[in-house]
Length: 225
Image (tube, rainbow, N blue to C red):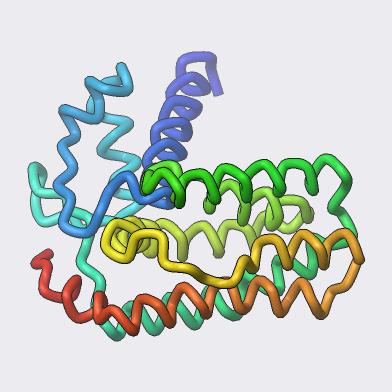
């Protein structure tokens, strides 16, 4: 591979990574229209790497390509919600347990910082900061283990779920929930795998129960692709 090809590959990867991050942190909501031209201008790249990235994301179910000019974040439906929820409940508690032996004091410090940022975002009613801090917490934890395939699977679920979670936060605001993140941190310090699994499972389940109580799945299912 020559230098130009290497540079092009790196550019494609960086554009793809940036769009994935935006989806996982909810910066793109269901029904959001993506313009290759505007994204390319914002990132300072040509439209080619943007199109390549969108094609990859479409293959992962994160966006829907209707035509060359119509790329959209798909709606959430009950069936899709249940499928993604099931994947999260299988993958994420397992990833936390696998990561436990690799977690250090620095990881704990980063997790506490993310949780503090999340608490502040709730008080400030800052949905974007909330999503970013929540993402940071979970992926500091999961990425500690040398399990890239497992991490990639979780990311693939998050890029489909993140846009919907952003809408949920915007509608339910700062409703009080048990602080499962703090429980997870306590379990990590105690090296208690069972308590860590329970905290992560409960964190996911509590959020999903809140969504079901608000009826948002049915509402979002009405957004056309």
